[in-house]
Length: 116
Length: 113
Image (cartoon, rainbow over all chains, first blue to last red; front, side):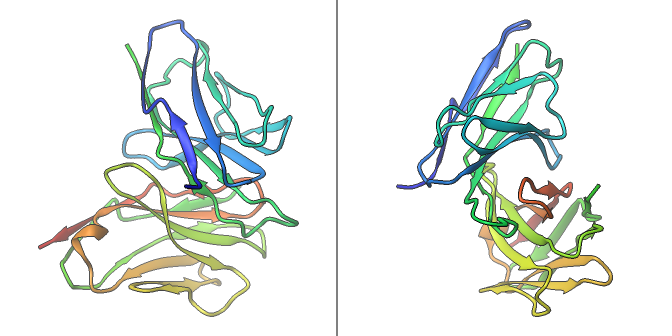
C-alpha cells in the first residue's frame, strides 16, 4: 500500500542523547515535512524539503537536524540541544508540481518521543 | 505572517445533529488554500475537506461542508448528521506558499449518543 511510514512509534531519550526518527514515503512525492505537536496544541513546522539534497528550516528548527539523501526518505534527528523534546512528531509529504500551492499534505501516523 | 485561529477549544453535539466549527485566518495573499484536518485518538491527521480561495463555491464532501467567507477571512466546517466516529480533534489550516501549512489550535469535538 502507498503511504508514509514513521518509526519508531514510541521512543525514549535520555538527557544529552541524540535520537533519530525515521520517515519513509512510497507516494513518489517530492516534498516532505516534519511537524511537532505538543499536548492540546496544533502542529508546528520543524523542517521541510522540496527536493533531494535540499531542505529549509521551519518555525521551530532549533535543536533539530534533517537530511534528504533520497526522495523517499526524510529522517529527523532530535539533538541534545533541543531542551524540551517530549512531543508527538508527524512526518508529511506532498506532490510538488508547478506552483504546487494546492497540493494536499498527507501525514504519517506519528512518533511519540519522551525524555526520561 | 499567516495565522489561523480556532476560537472553540471544545464542542459537543448530539448524534445525528449538525455542528459547526469556526475558523478565522489572516493572510496578505490573494491565492491560498484552506483545509480542515481530523485527528482521531490514533493521532493520525486525516484530510477532511479543502477549499481553494479563488473559488466562490463552498466545498462539500458528503456530510462535511464549509462556509467560506473570503472577505471576512472565515472558514467554518459544518458536519451534518453527526456520527460517533466523527469524534476527534479538528484542525483548520492555511497554505499560502508551496512549503507549509499553518495550523490553528484545534477544536475537540465530542459526539453524545
